[in-house]
Length: 320
Image (cartoon, rainbow, N blue to C red):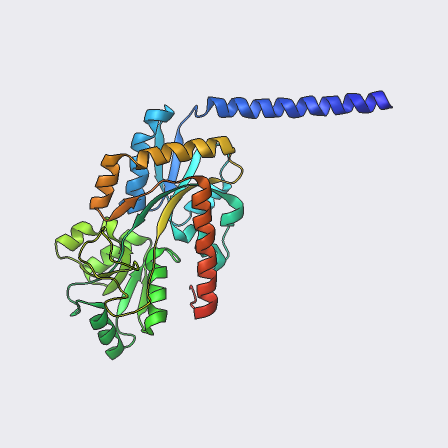
């Protein structure tokens, strides 16, 4: 009996070693086929940054990187994908905030693995040029004089434009009507067309519209003025003291992706995003190129989740 037990243990040990060896061999051979990055709609800043990574990562990886624009369901798809290092997700706050206010098909802490931060943006408050306001103070005065008559555009629920406005509405006490669109870019298009009057969004994708006068930027959401949008006052200093909102977008992999692959992709993504020409190009469009370790980005995500849990509890904000 003892001999049988010993033989059984030896067989299990051998099988475990074989599996570990096989997994190590797969990691050593990685990547041996194309890699995909899931992100939001075409034309968004997420899409632009994803395509920068897709252009430059193959130089080191030796494999093609493709971008798939999926919008809302992207996180669900990433969470259900095989954890083999061939699927990544580049997205912002809606990935890790939304599941705490609405039932989703994934849990951000359980089903996704942080890989690296990608970029942050100057989040700005925009109005249509036809609206007779040039400051937060003037916007607040107009909204208070016309309660429920001014509307704002927002794309995905719990994405930056929505959360920034929800926080603004709560702290200001304003009654603004939300008009939903399928993504940030359609929401921006609606503002340009005059279908709505107000919107918060990242400066990256609207700089040309601001410069041409088709949209008017009146404030930035950071605690201090941002070098990404020089000369633009903060929301806090121009009418709503205490208001502050920041946004970071990052890269995730499916949970249980081998740590060696996560670490390698984190290094390569960071190396691309730290290239001076990419830093300079993104800066010109109101975007700060980042890149980080998986641990640093994970800490950021967890802190943001706790922040929004507290905000919802303290303020009573409801995400529809």
